[in-house]
Image (cartoon, rainbow, N blue to C red):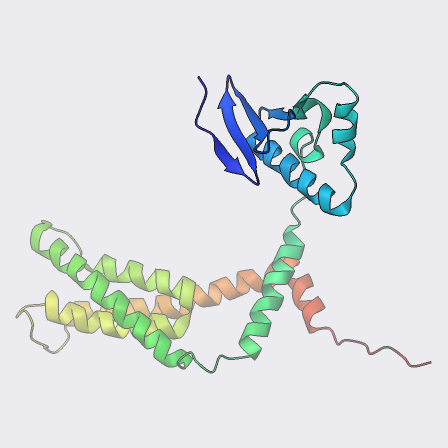
Length: 243
């Protein structure tokens, strides 16, 4: 079944029987044929470029020697990118870590003039996380028989400590204590003096806020790839000697 014609740079391109055919709109007898529509369009583009450069492509000259107005582009116009798989460079983990650390150090050395201070961003983050998990803890307390809603706050503290460090996790621990006191501890929606359980959970979250980033920093600095990277980044740059 023949498809409707689509015009491309004064050529009418149609599809029939699994092949694409391009016929010039000026009535020329030449017909370009290929199983790939992008190869047909590339051939048309090369022909137009050849008119401006006054030199026909080599594949077009070879095709004309056959005295056949129907040119099979899949035979005469063999493109390396369509027949050969591209070479993929092997993944270099050490080089990737080195580039990431160098980029991080450069960004830290050049603070943005638009972004708010780090403490403001971490406070906003802690508030957003608190507002997100407080309803979850409230629903667990309300509908979960024997459930421990405190674990929701602790899991959030661990996640923030891993991704944003000690200060953000400590802020979240403080906000979580307030949210727990308001939404979990009776009387509801009233701030009362924290009980023993609240103090223990808050102390545990504060300990997690200190311990998790510290343990991650130890793991980071003891990794051999990172040690080599930090040594390379911190090494002084030698200026070229003038002759």
